[in-house]
Image (cartoon, rainbow, N blue to C red; front, side):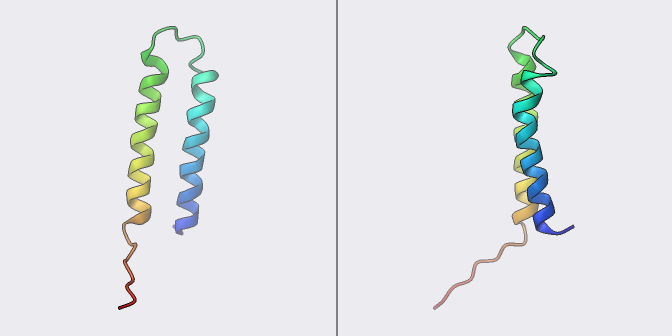
Length: 62
């Protein structure tokens, strides 16, 4: 899959981080409802960023 398609997936997860806690988890009164979701989503984003940038190379102009 092209790198640009993975970036859109990262943005989709970021959008879900705003939508899910205020819609699906709005009736969860305990603090860990949205906190656990954001923790999981953060780990997903970190994993996607590692996958997207694994082929980046440093180019020097010496």
